[in-house]
Image 1 (cartoon, rainbow, N blue to C red):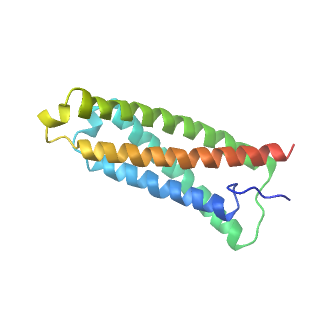
Image 2 (image 1 turned 90 degrees about the vertical axis):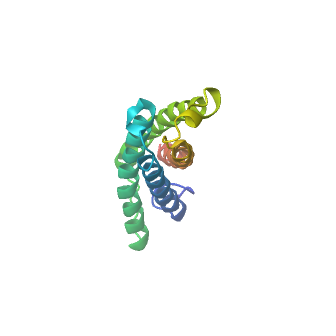
Length: 155
């Protein structure tokens, strides 16, 4: 069976999943460290999407580690179809959350100088969280495309 770089069950696929977990956790912790994030729906939604991303990527990273450690091939088309569908759904959630939170961060920091007037807000933590979430989405997109490419190669 042909393996595609970045697909589930390869070293690069495992690295993508572990990286998604690390950056999603970083985004969540940066957002939690900012005072008042839950008052703004875009930041709350980004945090929700990042937690969902972490909870989705962690078991898949463990599954990739298991399959690589035990030399198992876990590329059943039905299983891969489920992974690809959920990957795309989570990627859309992450992208929409990142876009909304990035807009709000730029609005607060540059457009209305809200962060200067309310210094107790963690605007730098908001910006860091959005940046880490964007990196997470980029890794998720790469993983989604490689899984989709592997799924197409079955047919």
